[in-house]
Image (cartoon, rainbow, N blue to C red):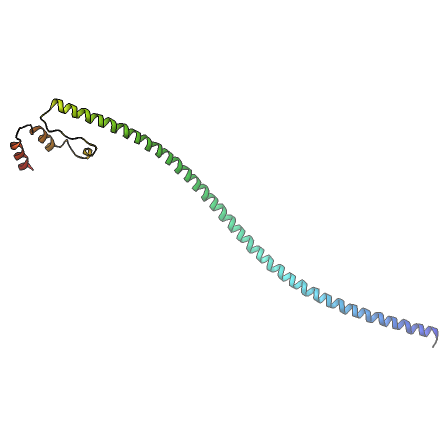
Length: 170
């Protein structure tokens, strides 16, 4: 075999080897492309699902923001109502304290007036039936006609005439 023919055979073997290596590389690349395509498809599907989740979450965020705004407004209204209630309570407590103080003063004045009235009745009308004034007698009606008649007519020493008359009227 001559030198150029041997060289050609070697060259053909090298080319054959290069072609086989290229076919192997292409097959390997094709497998990688298929694998990458599958991975890309899976990632695209995951991305689509994530987009749907993001859209759903954004919708929930919008709803929650709307709810927060609504509850913030309601909270502000309640805060204003609470503040107004506290102010009203403070005013009412002040009025109550003033009324208690006034009641105390009036009760003292009433007690003094009762004492003076008792003294006056003892000195001016010693034989008249005395009305016993106490705090509980405020709810009785000492000014009733029967009470006045009984008080004024009981001056009779025995009281029989008037007692009989009252029993017949009653």
